[in-house]
Image 1 (cartoon, rainbow, N blue to C red):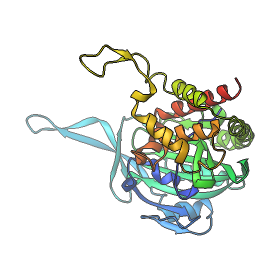
Image 2: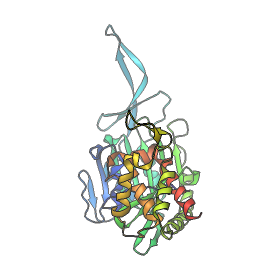
Image 3: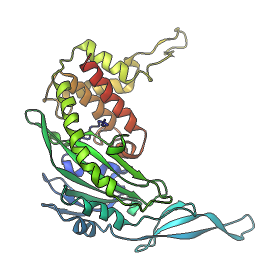
Image 4: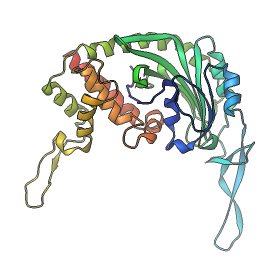
Length: 345
């Protein structure tokens, strides 16, 4: 079971750059250049790099240590805090505040993850977010490219990440990327085989063997994902079907009643009362990649996920953070399930 999202960027390998709250939070990194995209901070190469070289090029092998924190009381006396600070050793920058039992995981463990997968993947990016508070890499899983419709190719990627912000653990997740127009269609799943995550408590430095073993499962699930997308692309979309799809997707938002005018009686909410509806209709007809499988449930599905998740629409820069680490992961999975239910009804 995969969570489907859509990230509209000019380059498949640049979508990771939008993970931060704003692009300015991406402070350094390495990027595989695919089509002339611009990278404002970091190093671009026209070929993939071995994992260690990629991490070194990105400046991602710094170490982190815990340091006591102090505060002053009302009369100016200094006391040690219950929390401790996570400090980047090479720059002295504080990255986060944690409890004393927090177990630090160094970046070389994330590198170890990437190196262990070297026969299975091709490295694409290594980035530092918020001065290193989050470090992540992306890599394409070899042998996972397939067409949904002619010319509309999707492929599987793995994202490995590590946080030093006191909130983000260490883990890996899979994405399915739409190569044409560089849209990401699938994110991690809540399924154990597709999402590996550890907190910074005891065992945080556990072996990454289970993650490596899950790569084969990712290939198998990728085939199932593509078949689901093909089903959507072969399902004609009528106005009634589109409306039913949207009403189910936004059932929570249109539940209850609304009172537009103080002198008018309350009435049931409709799709037209939602700001997002007009953007979705626009994306159905004119979204990036709309020319592939037009007038199908696939186009409606892509329109919804584009508006919900694209870093190039609305408050785009914050969307991937929500998708990878926030509430939108479950939301976009629900969109996929609704679309497939309607396609098989």
